[in-house]
Amino acid sequence: MLVLPKGLRHIPGHIDRAGQQALLEEIRAVVRQAPLYRPEMPRSGKPFSVRMSNCGELGWVADRNGYRYQARHPVTDAPWPPIPQVLLDMWRELTGDPRPPQACLINYYDTSARMGLHQDRDENDLSAPVLSVSLGDSCLFRFGGTERTQPTKSFRLESGDIVVLGGESRLIFHGVDRIYPTTSTLLADGGRINLTLRRVGA
Ligand code: MD5
Ligand code: FE
Image (cartoon, rainbow, N blue to C red; front, side, top):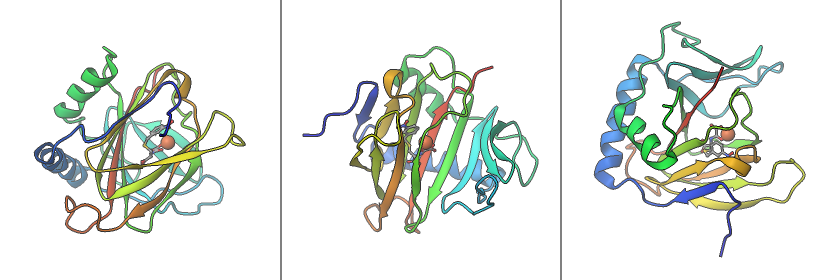
């Protein structure tokens, strides 16, 4: 049995199939306004394998100049669309935090995309939780401790699963090792969408 660190909560199958389809339609509408783009690593300019967009007052972006939150799409320069109400409701229900999320990062993984082990520390307010929603193909999610050298463990995330991170786990290293192709029929063309809701702070 896998024991998760304090502050990391995995809620398998929280969203049923109809709920996943409804949420997917909302995300499709967001991405029509704010298209997925391919971020680049700071300094090297090496492209991410994951494509990204955002909704909310702020969006997380990555380019040669660094990682940051900003109010506009890096390609279209348009403000990000609002966060769908169903996600605001989920945040309130599952985090209990009365302050609404300011940013929702949309990650799209094709079946060859991955995300290396990293910490999320571009937010000013690290006391607020992070809520993650998985849609589409399953992935192998890896997490470790708050130091890169600590041992890691992994588990599968499936369509409709939610992860809530907070407290002692807010700064753990984590990543996505691989996508398991054809494990979901939610996305016609396969791949995985991950939504992360956050507060950014001052
Ligand atoms: C994903 N996203 O599945 C992953 C993991 C990201 C990111 O890591 O930064 O967009 S979603 C679960 C998650 C999110 C934020 C923090 C932590 C896990 N964590 O500290 O373990 O696209
Ligand atoms: Fe992360």
